[in-house]
Amino acid sequence: MLATHFIFRYVAVCRHQKLYLFDGNRIYLLFIPPVTLFVIWTLSIYFNFGPNQIKKDFFREMTMELYEEDIDMIAFMGPLYFVICLSTCLICALKTYRKLNDMTIQLSTRTRNLNKQLFWTLGLQTLLPFVTQYIPVGTMFLLPFFEIRFGRIGNVGRREDKDFDHR
Picture (cartoon, rainbow, N blue to C red):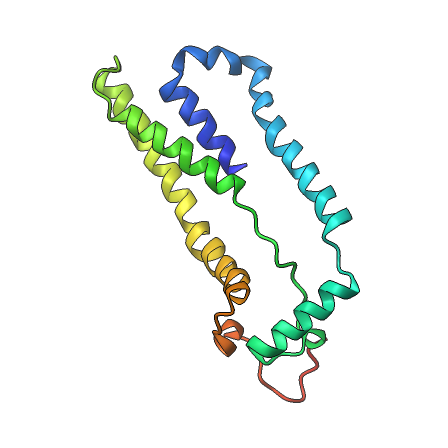
């Protein structure tokens, strides 16, 4: 859904002659790609990446070796992470930024300033979840694949009480 905002901002700034594509109820056409990707992603995860014995054994061994944790005693999270949304945001943001700063484009000062303000607002709205969610979770998923150990720091905030049942 975040990529949808970037796509609309890109069309509004870089391809403003195409804004007619989003007039009236046609604005809902913007939601077809994210909903389609959601359905594909959900079905793909459901049918292809569900837990099975091979994956459980692999992640049990890796989690014990790298984190010294028993996977049966911690929450199981799928180790898959996708970047299509992030790539879309970055590409559209870069193109929009370049177009906003291209002085050969005929925009009034007021329109250009408004579009810049909306662009930076969208960027800040993207930055918070990126820093607080995508980077930490992505790091925790990806580092073990490169056999980089960060041990118990990945469990910051986890209760260490021996009497606490982790199941």
